[in-house]
Length: 473
View 1 (spheres, rainbow, N blue to C red):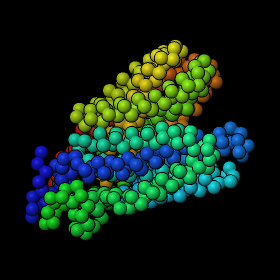
View 2: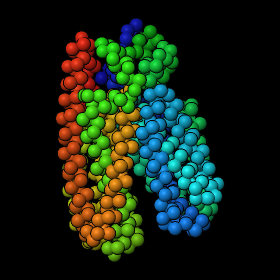
View 3: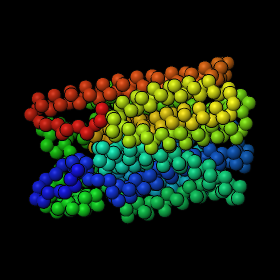
View 4: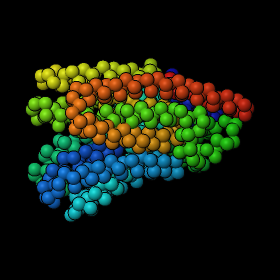
């Protein structure tokens, strides 16, 4: 594939990005956005390890500690739903740097909190900053990715989030016994502030944002020459939709949230949210209840911890294969197959849960490949479904609405167990949820094709042209 950019000519942004081989600029971008995701995961999970020490020092009951543990999740929803769409006005670069600085400062303040209400408020506000950062990090990485590698890029940086969860446990095991729970937040706050100084110097902005907000020609070229050093100063760079004829599009572009509900996207948006909710319901149900359930069934504490960890490790390993498959064979078909296999693996876990430790750990790893791996994959699918100008809003709202499933899953499992439903039956219901998710993705693929056809027809009726879709269906 040629990467030469003609002089004294014009080139569309998406064509310029697609023509470039993956190189040093891409690896730097993946490292920067991946670091944001890593610290996001580290900060999110740190509270879980600090909680026992906080409860002991402040003499808190489990009912009083619960809101503190849930505060950052509630803040995440605010960040996803309300703050992430601000990227349309500020650009991804500014919003990422602001968010990283925000949750770094607030995490440091958690280290000096001296009451339950203070810590609860700080964790909520920290979660809002975390929620604002993730969609922009995902969107920025996917925007610079060639279409043939976009899902792989998104899966890669989302693995960093999972690694942050793992690192929180490792750091806490060293820091808390030596310096107490406050030291965890001191470390978790200092690292984002250090990263923010690096991001100020090295993180590029969204070229789509620059083009659509009338940035100087020199500013656009300065950004893109980091990707394409041979880009001539005389070459005019066009936004992907620059030659569309429908004047109404400009008005819609100023309201990215409304774009999610336009006629040709409405059904796809609803189905995407349903897939997120089903996946997150199973993910959080397993993460929340697995240690308790395994202990009640007579498994050792070490087996319970290992099984829970393997559900995360399985997802990280699976991401190495799912991402390239989504790029080569289609995002929708790959994710549908992941969910279908996930239904089988979760059902297998339901059978193994009452057996020996060896079979249980293998089944936990296999279930994790599709439960955790599926969660990474559905985010990659969201970046394929939405164009760059509304991608951050689309990803943020899908993550935010998906948290409804994340909240409902553990609650429903608790109610089922309290009602005497056998543990095996609970996990078989989770398997059924993944089977339903596979059907939802199949319907989403159909809705995406129909939506693009409807949009093409509308543009043709206005005498315009639709840029060739880079969506892999």
